[in-house]
Image 1 (tube, helix red, strand yellow):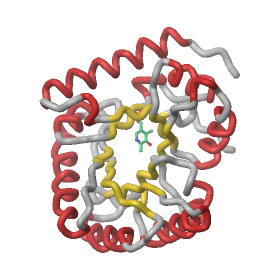
Image 2 (cartoon, rainbow, N blue to C red):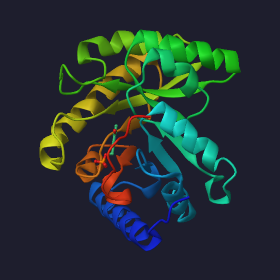
Image 3 (cartoon, protein in one colour):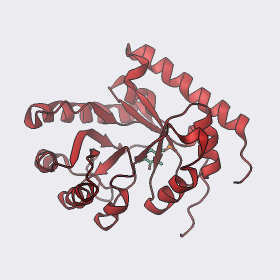
Image 4 (cartoon, protein in one colour):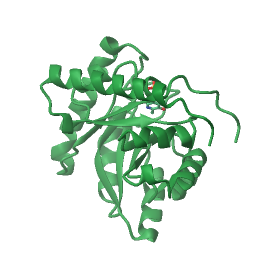
Length: 242
Ligand SMILES: *Cc1c(COP(=O)(O)O)cnc(C)c1O
């Protein structure tokens, strides 16, 4: 594994944890109510292992091949025994079979077709795959996620699949690095979740929202999972074609 600047990683990770603790205090919420997911896409397995050794448990990955490679590389690493992997990237149905059963939570279900592909694989493995539905909260044509008006039908379809466990919603707001502007979108995701509870009869505990530039506002609006990359690992190296 490449040389890793452990002191720099530790400083950044601790600073994110302090910001999270401060926003929890401001929101009057308990520390165990929000999990910090360290988003490690395009960073090395060595960096992931270093952050895991500090006590970080949840890690998020965006690209199937890269994520599975890191999982294999770290499977026997002593610091990584308690790790939980989250799939947070756009997922094509044809790659669903590589994801089901390998991630503690898939955040990005946004179509019936993808849900059915995950269901098929989870059933074959004899497991239940926890999932979130990704909502296109800003109704942006170029972004993934189900549109608001399609959400109830998709939630009902996911609930009907016995090997998927729908646990909540995820979003990427249409503004980047601006917490005050993102905040109404986080509030909207919470409202959508609240409205789905009676429809599905499920607790839908999770709201996956908030990144490096806006997680404090997400915590104030009820996030239970925040996804932080840059502020833990530093700037991402460019994506090379695998
Ligand atoms: C990359 C990524 C993040 C982390 O973004 P940062 O701004 O680096 O914290 C969070 N969520 C998703 C879906 C991502 O793709």
